[in-house]
Length: 268
Image 1 (tube, rainbow, N blue to C red):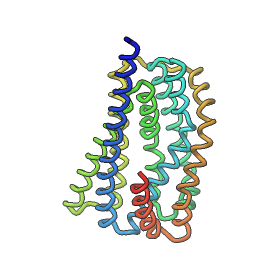
Image 2: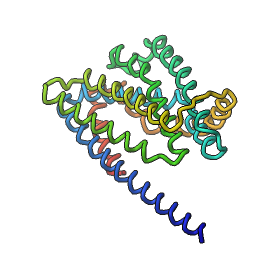
Image 3: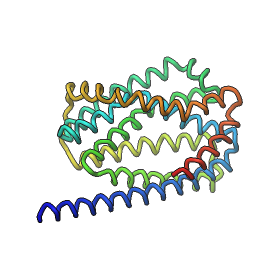
């Protein structure tokens, strides 16, 4: 009888969490769409295309640079019972190491990145590489919270960041300062703030932090299997914008990205 009650309570919790996550996603998508409309109407296709390329480059960097490590940590935390302190500490070391390598890759490979992403200024390309550690940590943090059944928290934080973003966009628009440079700086700044808030939340849950080289090796080995699928997926769905920019320019990317955004909303 006790087990039945526990199962019913667990089922109710799962349903409530699922409903909260769906509601938060729906609201975040709606607010994000409003922000996208304001940005698109204010910047125009060419500058909107530059902003979209910055987001695309940032997405490529995170997906390629993470190496599936977050998924590996999630597996060993949720399925193998690794403690949160060790998982978090190992993730932090990975973020620091891979963050430095990512920054070096961006700096040394700048001439090549400019050829792949024509239309982006040097500082925009470098910014995408240098703020990658915050994005790395955000994903690892999200995986850890999912592993300890706190996934709703990650979506709530995402919603709060979306609200701050839309308020900042409206403020910039009202003060006639909504241009491509400021919107890119805003995106990077919110990404860093998101990472800091995530770190504080996880440290409140578990103050101890310790790294494990053995856990890092196992997580990397496990994550690399999933990593192949991630890379195939992102190349399949996002390489088109790189091609459009290379042949048709940032204006065409801006127009195309708006249509993709609407299609993704309808799909959701």
